[in-house]
Image (cartoon, rainbow, N blue to C red; front, side):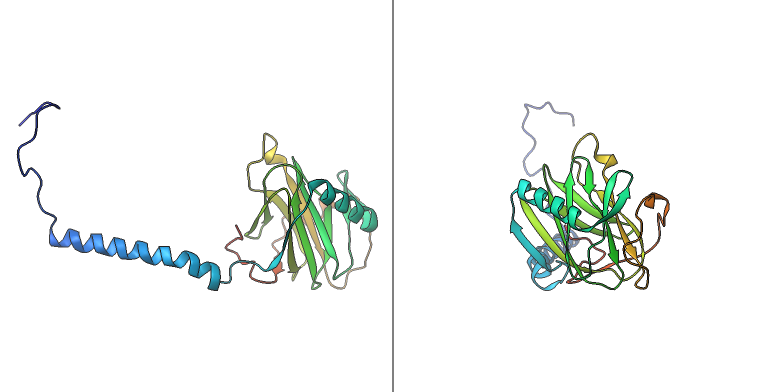
Length: 213
C-alpha cells in the first residue's frame, strides 16, 4: 500500500532476524575482532617492519650532509646528476625533493650499507622498482635502512606519494655493480646501461615484498 512520507507505517512492520542471518552477523563480528587484534600483533610480532635508525633532522642540515657526501664520493654524472660510489660499509645519503632524487647511487653487490632517506620539502614515497619495497620519506626525519644488495642491476627509485605537478618526473636510480667489477669506473652515460634489469636487493631487518609503509 502506498503511503506518503508523513504517514506513520503500520505497527510491527518489521520482521525478526532469522537464525541464519544471526549466524552470519556473529561470524562477521568475530572476523572483525580477529582483524582488529591482528593490527597490534602484526606490528609487534609480524617482522614486516624493517629495522633502521630514525631521528629528527633539520632539512637544511640533511641537504648539507648530502652535498658533502656527493663531494666525497662522486665518480661521474648521469644526465646531469652526480653519481656517487661510496665504499662498502659506509653511510649512503639519498635526498628527496620536488621533483628529483639526489644523487645517483652506485653500490657493490654483497656489501652492507646504511641507506639514509629524507625529504627537503614535502612527503615523498620511496619505491624501488622492479622490487616491491616502499617507504615513506618525511621532511624533518632521517630514516636509515641497513641494506645488502644481493644481485647486480639497475634499479629505479620512484616517488609513490603524490608531491605536486611534477610527481611523475621524480625518478632516481640505484646501480648495483657485480662483486668482481672494477671500482671507480666512469659514470657518464649510465642511462644506457642495464635499464629494467630484473634484479633484487635484500634489506636487512624485514624489508619484505609487502612494503614498509
